[in-house]
Length: 151
Image (cartoon, one colour):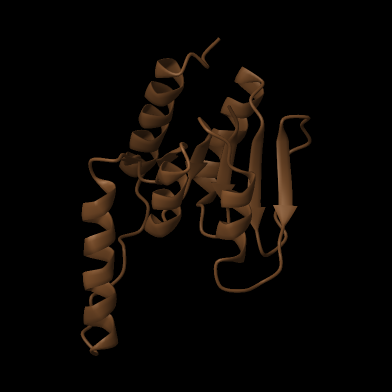
């Protein structure tokens, strides 16, 4: 199993957790983004810069995804693609996307897009809180334990 990160919008606090986990468990973690990122020197942490453009990073993640891999993303369509390809997905706030909840998330996303395109201000997501970061760390640990990745 590897971890693939939709890194363009991934908060620093989440990347820091992933860096520590990657080293601790000798688990390959690849950050995919369309702009340069700083990553710590490690044989387990990789960075792939892709061209700018709509869904270019997402498409690269899907292309590299293998059954059982974990994708870290707040992009619901990417999470759906990961699940459809036999992977797993967690968002930076600690929500594990599953076959049971992904359709509802897609429907809500589409509704919000429709509202925004009609001129309704739907606001944006709240800033990532320390509670969100802790939820992510807990969910990641729970996922890794379930998939026998913890040492």
